[in-house]
Image (cartoon, rainbow, N blue to C red; front, side):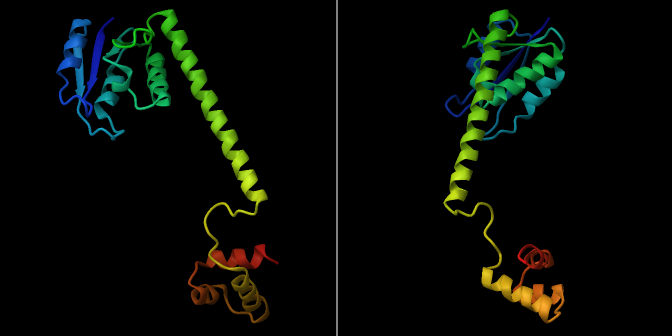
Length: 186
C-alpha cells in the first residue's frame, strides 16, 4: 500500500507549500502538484494520478476542494478510485476516508444526496416546462418562419409547383425548413 498525495493550487493560496508539507507529514511517498487557473476544470495532473494509482494505494489530499469542483465530480473521482481498488483520504475532512467503513458509508450518503438533487432538478424542470406550455410559451429555438410565411410557402410549393430549393433561396432558409413547413402544417 502506498500513500500518494495530490495538491492543487487555488486562488487564495499562491503556493502549494502548505499542502505539500501536510501531505509529506501524512506519509505520502509520492506527491503530485497541479497548477491551473481557478475556474479551469481541466486538471491533467489529476488525470495522470488517477491512471497511475494501483490497487491498495490511497490518494491523499489536503482537502476535498483541492480534489473536486463539485459533489458529483467528487463522487466520480471516488468511483474511479473504487474501481481501481484504491482509497481516498482527506486531511482536513477526516470523515472522508474510504479506507475505513464509516468513510465509505459517508460517501455513499453523499452519492444518494447528489442523485436526489439531480432527480429533484429534473422534476422541477419538467414541471416548469409543462406549465410554460400550458401558458402558451414556445420552448426551444425561435421559429424561422411566421405562420403567414408558412402559408405562402405551402401555396408556392403545392399550387404553383415552385421547387423546394427555389423557395428556400427566396426565404433565405435551408431546404429542410421548407420541407417541414410543407409537410407539418397541412
